[in-house]
Image (cartoon, rainbow, N blue to C red):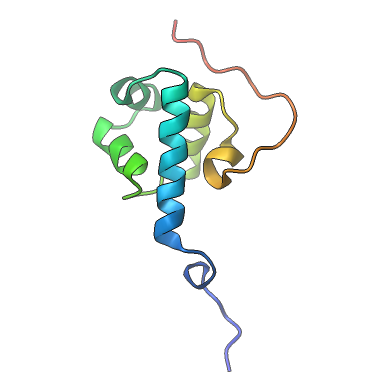
Length: 95
């Protein structure tokens, strides 16, 4: 009998990817930033951002941090959808 459990056994991984993608898109749209602009700011291809938003891929943590910073949301919210209290760093100005 094995007690080892994978994350895929616990979480619906395809759904988790879509949820993260939905939050990335929502954060981007709430800041009125188009995909090409956010991709450029995060130093990725626009197609990569499109794949993240569609839930085809999940960004690495450093990209989640950059997306959160450019869109003015918390990285934890992008990852989990759970909001935490407290001040956040202001988004990077586009100047």
